[in-house]
Length: 251
Image (cartoon, rainbow, N blue to C red; front, side, top):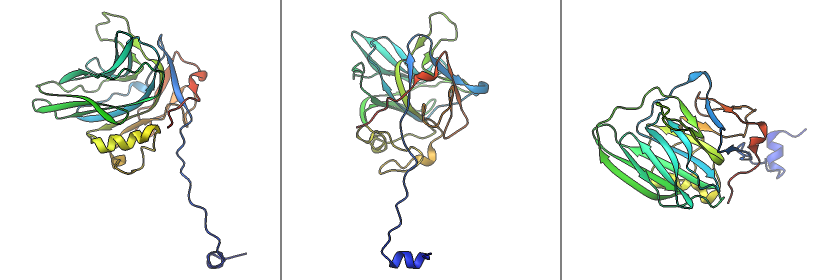
């Protein structure tokens, strides 16, 4: 039996450690009643932050991937034959310019900088590049202790029907109290292939700031979707195990 010294002197090179990160699953939502909500009524507070997700759709109907209360959400708004990214936050709202109905994967990042009563900026990045931004100075009440829903929007008053996601979603993440810069967003896009958000990589040096990360199938057991960075786990609602699909973004 060779000792470590003999192994090295004999020219045997130890195998390099392999990464445990693999992306093989996403969630498919039917646009009718599929969505996810938190287990145990967990609630969340967001103000200055960043969030990101991969989406794929060929539907031109209005859709809602991400909602916290009815004043803080990322939306796909229907205009003509396309849907466009749209961000709503306490100090501003803005529609993007890039149509997203091509049935291809797109990486969306939203950053919110500032706060109540000070100059604040919201930015929408699509596929690693800035699409639109808006700056405003508005005094507002921070949205606190609200349930986060994925793939469903329903306003508190119930004055109109709920809106759902129609397509696939993957690798949803939140960096609370952290505004990702443009270089970090480009690194996260990684030319079209998701990366391990729990490890710094190139210009992405914010892994320590990651507060929530849902792999959307990888490592999950139906009907639970685990939070890989925090404690905000989801349950798939009105969905089936077959909605965990082998369909993922890749370059």
